[in-house]
Image (tube, rainbow, N blue to C red):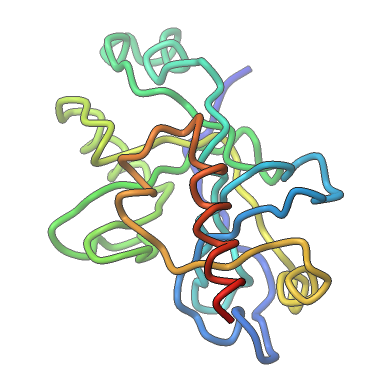
Length: 194
């Protein structure tokens, strides 16, 4: 199967109060009783692009496949890229997105935190692929998660998710195998204080 480097932001605009209206990127931490198996025990970073619904990537589902293996047939010059591809979500699993550090806002990139962006732009990918691998400055994802207008707020109101501000250390530096547990502790503490 060939993978396509694409970012499709084709969801409808959110229109009522809640995280969707706020527009600030957030972490969603699936509660232990999350009914959707696509998102059980996941942490998702979610952004709010203009003229589109919320979208993001699952941070803690590594596939075991490396970028170099993914592109081995089509782009042998990338064969040595050792970055792990994460399963970003059920929407467009054949699309590749990336969270990455950049000193200034690139065109065709959604801000996630200070100097951290989400994109699927081919030119940005080529730039990242030409730089030495740095797992604390970038992560790659096959597919993404997306919500229709009002859907995410409804899921939060039903109690499916904890919502936390984006933490750059958790986003790019914490080990993905303990990410959900560590953020569950934080989210539970925030909820208890409220």
